[in-house]
Length: 401
Image (cartoon, rainbow, N blue to C red):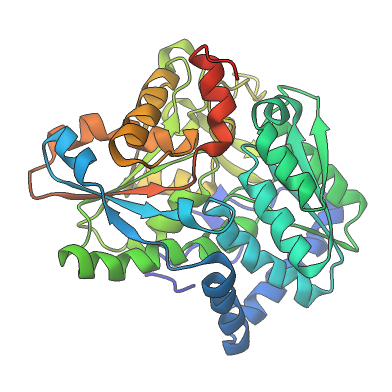
């Protein structure tokens, strides 16, 4: 959980003009309690020892940095390396953050855990750590996502957590987060809310980033060992932005490494049917923080469209919004068809089935590798595995089990 010279957020939770704490008065005390607890514990030797021990013994870290030889040969330029977060316990990067936050909940004496989830990976990770400590757990999930992520819904239930399907709005991640916040307001005294991305009110974007930054910290050392330099580029998908921020953060003050976030282009940016606020959004406030949003002229949140449940969100983390505005990170979008093509391509070439979220990052390798020299080393953050998406992909491909 080391910082860099870009030591934000400030004391009010802002990254430039983005971030902050726009919540009902009921939650202000809870957020201050959380921030004070985190600031007290984060640098304590016993807390760090417990956190990194759990990452090693329970999660299985460090995750490997793998040379994708056939994928590299396919593009014919440069070397493509994969940071294998899909090999973590529960199959994604989400477990890094839930391990950290469940330790905070334990230190705060909270007995009830809630979380929101889109693709279900954060729900599975939260239910996993709650089961490990014997805590009551409730997961909020959009009804549309419950249907397309049925495997993860069943996994969450097997772990002893209760899944609450949310029918309001578009019945996706935004609406699940709304309901989780309502629960927290009502049960703030005994409940800990494990937010799964670098979104929401301060201090959550900072906390989730810090716990996930173990990914980037490992990559710095692995890059030196594997190719004796820093990566020329790091590519990661961006919905709320936790996997990207986890790998980007330790590299923010390493200027020779390009940071490239890939949003969900849905049916195409020009159609308006997408989930790419950094490419086609404006600043506003959603879920307690100011960031780029998909909103109309009246400030009403617009519907999103993505084949990927985990990227189907109309906002993005405030630190990503800041990185975009200062020009430190680049943000692009790929559409559903491009992501699906990449899903099949990586599976067939490397024997690695990426999550549909991760497939968006892989889909951008086509244009990226064309502009880089043959000596370039590019790292793709494999944020999750794709077995959870089998039903979705099979349905699109016209296959019935």
